[in-house]
Length: 342
Figure 1 (tube, one colour):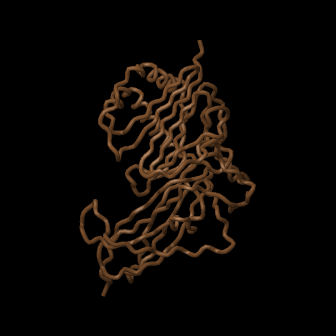
Figure 2 (spheres, one colour; figure 1 turned 180 degrees about the vertical axis):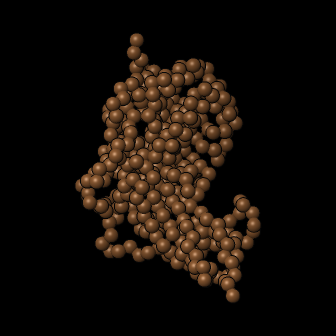
Figure 3 (tube, rainbow, N blue to C red; figure 1 turned 135 degrees about the vertical axis):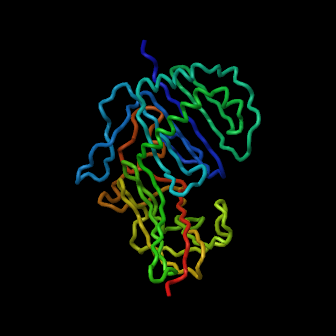
């Protein structure tokens, strides 16, 4: 007997609410500062990356000849610990039949109607929503990251979801990673430049609004430097100085497309006021997502794929165009300015 296909979703929301967007084909997605959505479908085959030809800049991957595998996709808007250098965006993993059956069995092993009432909870913890659909079966539960009794009751499934999410994170599909590098003058150590980079480390193209452009909350990319007056790992500077980004040309396109391994880079000059210990941080934030015309040879003909590119029904949109990046990513670097040589 052939099992019916299933879909399994796990949403994780935390921080300030930022409204709703259309995730895919009418499906609404609530956005918070920390938003993660893991979706697993057993009836959509996985995808792999082929070599990209010289005349094809936007095709990142095509469907392989697997018939019984499924796919897991992870949309990740911000690192939970705000670690510098963490990657945000779209990730995916191909799940083989045995892995899919483990997930199906884990769901079936839980007596959902007899789950305990949630206890504990933490206002600052992530809020989770779990949804499973298979044939006529529909299960949905919402709980808080501090509800230890619920997480313990669904432990076999919870561990599998954690492993699946970790596998997805190792498969960047269309992602954004921030980096910052110090370039100092050997003859004059106080004379510095910061090389700030936003890079797509995924196998498919992405689209972002030009980082130099501002929205109602200010610049999308903010670079700051400050002196570390207290030598403790968990403490940064108490005062920060904003560094100016290059001006945006009047004819610059609003939205930029980065193909795989492509980057945007700015070099910002700065002179240290005195020797000492310092920290520089770069933070990119955009929850509105890209819009408008595009840079690159495809121009305005290029279509973005949905925020959640695997819909509840039908084919997936992976590989059909650039992925629109939303969220927050950052980079930090601590350094020391020494006395100049005499």
